[in-house]
Amino acid sequence: MKTIRKVAIVSASRTAFNKGFTLYENQTPKDLLIGALQGLIDKADLSEKQIDEVVGGAVLNASSDFNLVREAILQTTLSNYTSGYNVQQACGTSLQTAGIIMAKIASGQIESGIACGVDSVSKVPFSAHPKFADRLLNVFKAKTTMKKLKCFKGFSLKELIPIPVGVNEPQTGLSMGGHCELMAKEWGITRKQQDEFALSSHKKASQAVKLRFNSDLISPYVGVYDDNILRHDISMSDLEKLRPAFDKKNGTITPGNATALTDGASAVLLASEDWAKQNGFDIHATISFIAHSANDFTAGDGLLMAPTIAVDKVLKQAGLKFQDFDFYEFHEAFAAQTLCFLKAMNDEEYNKKFFSRNKVHGEVDMKKVNLVGSSLAYGHPFAATGGRILGVCEKLIRENKDFNRGLIAICTAGGMGISAIVERY
Image (cartoon, rainbow, N blue to C red):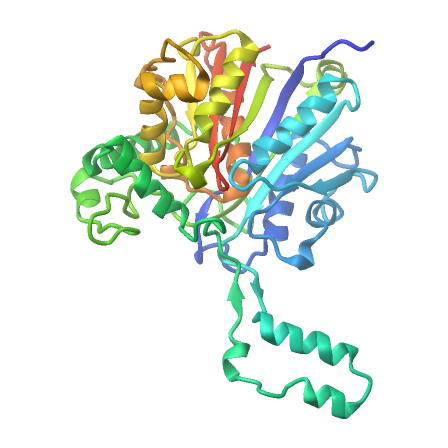
């Protein structure tokens, strides 16, 4: 029987994250994914090498990209014998794919793998109006010209209006922001608290950029070297001027304390200890535990609160407390989401209901949270964020001898969450 093996985070690379409809507006999701993969290949000297598996996906994926990952591989310098397939779990996609690869490496099924993700709001796929689509299918099936013409009986020009892929929750019809407004009200998260949290993310990210923290994590693509959402000169007065984006009358979530619509891609190389060493890599960090969760947001649990359950699970797996980490990387879908999550972890009633705990998980030192800024500052190309965060965790451990362990938490659409633990090798 094989023993569980350690899984090394060998290398990570991403494109710069750019605001939608700006510098990447002419790049397709496949183009961006190729850019992130090739950046990783060049950085880790993987040209012509066969990686056991590449697993990735996109949230806003066109049907024409049914084989997105494999097609991207074939347009990089990886060996064409490298297999790839698509996985999608909304904003947790690239952390989920890392979990899939991690499990296979740990159990000895494979030696190496690349977890990746991409999204582009600039190239949102559109579909035909259902009625017009039915007409076209009927035309395809019709055998005569007259029967084909009859398929357009009662045709309306409105049927020609294309329908963009939407990200509203199918079960409720509400947007993610709309759901987060409900959470903010339930947990008493104020506009000021959200704006202060967003300001902190930008300030920390700005300092990280000045120190060139991201310089070896971003691979230039189509002449773009830097993230363009981060605002170095942002102030509280700037944030206070912004109007609510979802609940126009009584809302607290604005474009300033919510992530911007973003284009970008990320890729992370994971491997067994033996493979990494045989290929000349120094190992600094491993991904050691991962947990996935879901809640019943249709019954009022809070759409973006499932990461609390995932964190509770991963802490139980590892036998650790919420405070047993040197740093925390919490995805900032909305400032309100992160603040609700943190408040719930210290709420007695919530801990009893969702974790069956008589003692709360408690608070963490906020000075350890998102040390170099996070999604509010860098942006959030849905499926690519997990890869960005894994790269940050590996580098924090590599560059800080006192950092031994980090905790990741990411919320996703559909009332789901993912948490992972990254440790020093």
